[in-house]
Image (cartoon, rainbow, N blue to C red; front, side, top):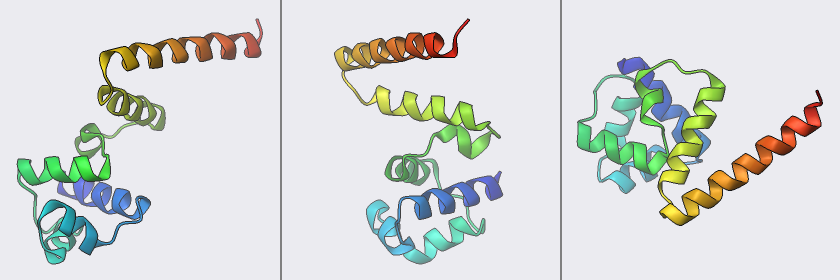
Length: 109
């Protein structure tokens, strides 16, 4: 599990274009600590892990479970929608329903 966390943190940090120094600053840790996490040499506490998840926009499930790409997309949508107000969440669901209906029409019978 440490290796999955290490690889995910490093991969997401790089995808976000963050240096170890900037990530460390954002979560109140040292760059050396981030390096240790990314190499799997240390395991962050629950509090620090929650900070890393928040800063990097990681779906916590990807840290612990092997997930398929389409599942990752679903989780990413869930994370983003969960940050919205209930009215905006309902609006997003309406849009998804409209898109789904449109895509089904495009695919034909």
